[in-house]
Length: 481
Image (cartoon, rainbow, N blue to C red; front, side, top):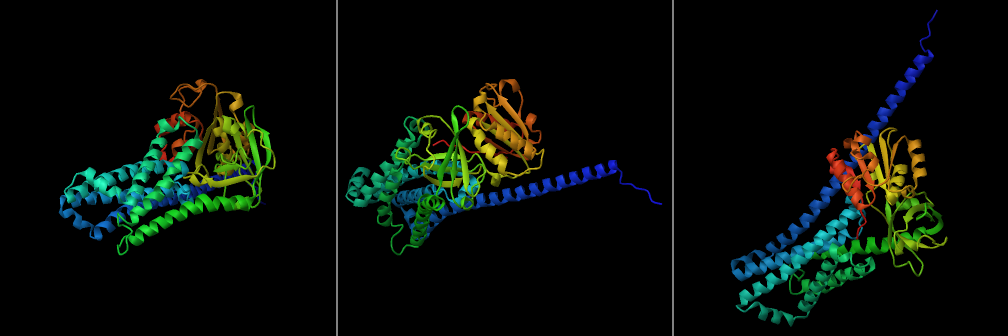
């Protein structure tokens, strides 16, 4: 005679235990996967930093090794050497800033385009001030050595054609630098700023003859010649490949067209695209691309829009809000409109994850990439919190889709609506005094993704850091130009 021990209660308990075990195993697997992913990205970032500083140091070391140290035997020579070194550093900064703006995939996947362009701007200042110091120190050094005043030396050098080109290049770089100052560039449209910014390429072209002749750093017989030629060739390769040829091949190869334009509230639309072989693009939910709609009115206007749904092999979608003249024209795009595209870009994707738990926060049209990331990223049910913020119900874009995804994937959804609790708060007045950890107690052990207006993101980031979330776990992208 035997006794059965697998009663309904026992079977239920066993199933619950097994489910809990599988859940823990899944959570551990995700945590390990994202931790490894984060470490790999940190290694790439460290490699890029070391590479940049190595280029700077190498340029100076090659100059000193090629009889550069002999300059320091006299006062005039020492001042001249200072001018040469500042010119070398400025030239390396010039190449690095061009590579940072070239949208090189390894850079984009490591630090994101917004941070790459931030570094680009900082290096631009280094370049302009470095070139200015280069010119002043060289003229002073030459004048001391020749025992004449600096103005007479400048007049002598002005008779050299490539010196004139170098001066014109300096004027062009100065104009670009002034136009890029935040207080200045906000006074005119993007197209005007971009046109002025193209002067930097003319300035670079004008400065090259000077490097081959007067500066001597590319002269025949110098040990630095291969270094400088290689650096300029790599820079040109990056610019042409990733800013010209790759976007062209992407546009021709995938044949993207507008398939539908569907209203999403009173002031926004979902623009849907069809194409071929879109999986080869490598785009994921949360990525952004530069879109050019090929009509006579729109072809010259690039639009950096994030995907609002995980793409398929034949379809993509963005959600666009009418925010002015540029986007107003997109509200009534005709189906069949051809589209030129660059990308995908950005770090607002699953590839930025470092932990198994995740917080996704979006405000206004920033909900669109949050919805796409929610669809594409992985997490154990209960290990994700989604926070949507809007001033009015009309600004809760894609809310029904977000609700459906949260229910299907086991994410907790919070909807905060109404006026903000204050200028330094990201929550609404109804939730005044609450912090991120009130919505996600484990936030310090999670990745936090947020997208929305800059003041709201600033307040959110400040609160997240105050709640103990390390900066490396906070992911946001900003499209200011």
